Length: 125
Image (tube, rainbow, N blue to C red):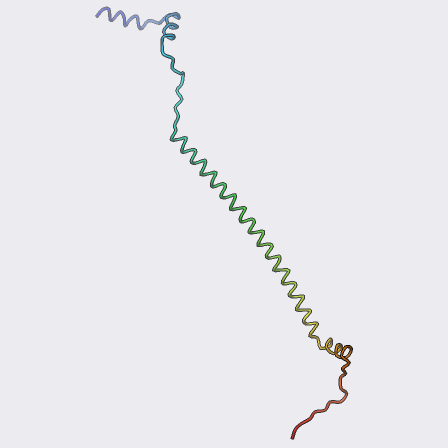
């Protein structure tokens, strides 16, 4: 028992530099730090990144589609405005063509018709 106490007493004494070097050479080489890979956390992060990327693509595609639809709507409105202006112009042309003065001038000049000086009505008895 006394020998054991002496061994424990010697074990507590500080080692010399040479003894420390020898123990370090004999000790198995372990890295100074351990790299622990958290694969579940990595997979969660990858899924999160992919989800965000897909959502960003969907938002980009959606905004592109809505922009193209907006341009198409503006084009249709422009065409509708042009057709309404054409319709108004045609209504004015129709009103000019229906004018009694114009019809009277065509009858006189082109057809050689005249307004009668006397008007006669006949009645049956």
